[in-house]
Length: 93
Image (cartoon, rainbow, N blue to C red; front, side, top):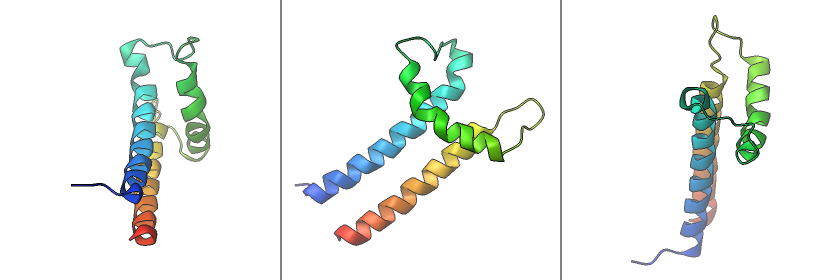
């Protein structure tokens, strides 16, 4: 079974979106895992996820003391991943 270059590209795009979603979850879980995301070695995670989370926080209110911006951000990235893959499959195939 061989995978075409186009198939590898689509898998790479899928993996990139999935990795970004995992970074959003890690940003949320950092407090529970006692990770300091502002540590010099982990600061890149905040630099990648904070722009999207900041925009979402601006538009999504807090639910009491709960910040659900990460959930909304995950849904946005998930939807973008699905739309992007549908477009790429139509272009490639």
